[in-house]
Length: 125
View 1 (tube, rainbow, N blue to C red):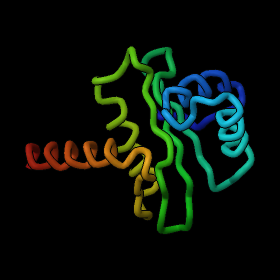
View 2: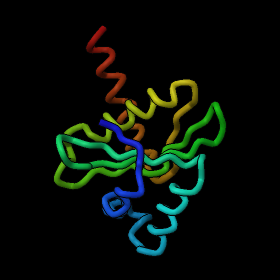
View 3: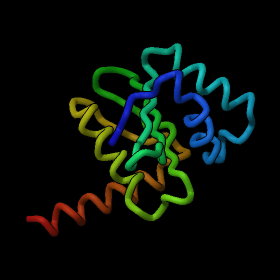
View 4: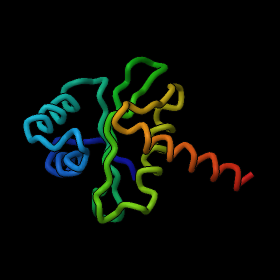
């Protein structure tokens, strides 16, 4: 289940974001969290499986028609279970009137999710 970030989850969010290659530095990570807390166009969501937050996805809303996924990370213990794909699908539902596109850091993962979703849709039809 996708949950909007709250200050009470700051340490969990920082831990999950720290798995991103460009968020390894503590000062950079603190700046990123601060931006999500203060900038209304930056939205951060945590993914919960049972009782644990295991994934995180961050969006920058550039306009009513464009939303950019700038962060996506899953706890290594929960990888290869489709959680990243589930997060992407939920974000696309939340921003259904906008083009949801990746930044350069997550473009390859985003493309895998898109290909997987198309395969799922073809199987269903």
